[in-house]
Length: 118
Length: 112
Image (cartoon, rainbow over all chains, first blue to last red; front, side, top):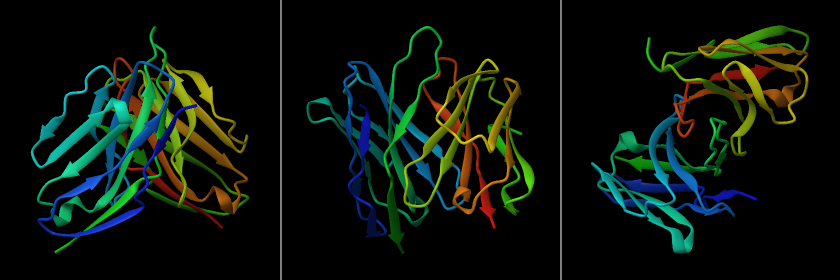
């Protein structure tokens, strides 16, 4: 069965600190996608990144970076020099790859609440 | 409007009421989804539609009735709900390969 674990329920940091959000996943599929979403207090889930299981290159986008380690089934997310606007719940998710036009099902972790204090 | 929109944003209803949630996507996607987000629980997939056809019903009680008249619109009809149905209901649409789902702002539902 597929499963996503975000062991950190809540993290509190002071502005400008770096913070890493952990994500560990389980799947028997050899091909899959991993995602991170941000949910600010307004409620909308904002898509941040999608990673294909064949691509283990780390990615950096501004202050955000992602570390995909297939050997440890982890897909961790680091925010550098955190800001108050980064305060939100962050969800890691996993989906299998469906061929032939079928829809993918996302399996979400329980989320990590990040509070960035000024 | 761009992206995925949902109305209403907030809804309070009694257990005997009938109401509907609406979702509209302006992204040209063919797949649409309903999720339920309750406090302290992971997001739960409720329904999936692909090209207007329902492809997934995740053992959702019949008091929730989805409708997808076209690929851009998705409804969730609610009747005789229970207080435990109070939650944030999120709609999403899927891109051309259904790999990434884009979410609307959600409807916060309170059942009294």
